[in-house]
Image (cartoon, rainbow, N blue to C red; front, side, top):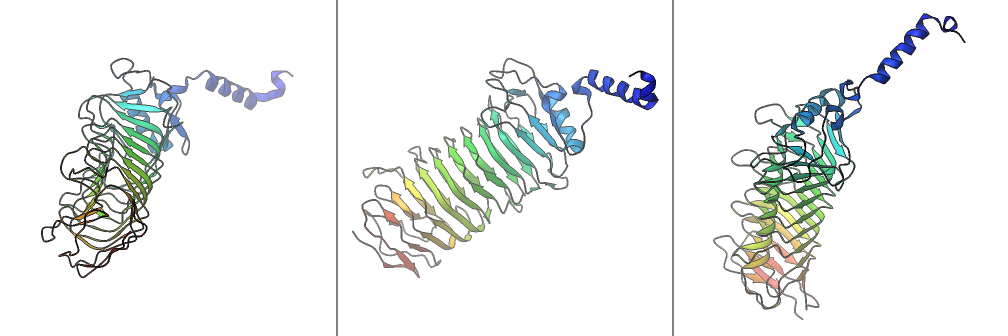
Length: 384
């Protein structure tokens, strides 16, 4: 067939196709609704230790800026290397963006500058950023980096299949004035805190759901929150966090901790715990149920309790297995005596009138234990 049979429109089409074939990928425009890769913008992701390799900060920031068009940013597998970042990456103020990789062990990005964050909504005084999704990758801190993901005034964000590790000056995830964060199938290890919520004098962050996740070897707490309104922590593991597992400091309610395994959340210093609720102010309404507490030998006399309750109202603590030596629960509020419930040491009288119910918790070595507090009194106590 000769070119005359194709015609002018056909020739123009062939020319356009050849031109697009020769055009370098990194200068192609992002198409709405499709993904862009950090490699399209020049990221090499070839660092092995944070000191070598290419600085990918500018390339990744350019890719993030393109999310106003493309909405999804892809981090391909890096193998034994990672994308090196030297300053904080600013997320665009745009709803519904997605950042994802090929797996938490294969797609890796690291902040290597002391005190810097990896991703930040940069939204302290701006409009809410909604629907951010991060999944299937590792966010790493080196050299004293601060936060892996900093969320301020954000709603309906999610992290799924993400590992947060090495943020020793802060936390894997930092939140402030945010609502409805979902963390699922994720890992938090070797940070200062796994998750840190900073309410301060402001509204705090509410409606968080943490499930199927692992918190281990963090220097302070697995989860450390200022307020815990409508928090849910389920089907997760917290172990070897130096100061404690889950800590809710001031204000909250509708808190549920269910089907969680706790072990060795202590470093031998005074005041350690697996769970501490109501450290400074009242938390109203919640439950700790169906969980397993492990990690205290029978002859251990350190100041460690699986559960510490400060200012709490109407809490249900039930159906937990307590594989500990001699202590299970301690009430910490100033008007409550030093009181314990456990197979080896307990008090018959509580000076609390806050309608807290403790029952159906089975310490190791007990056939049955049913402890019910009514108007500050234990009215039934199971025995061997």
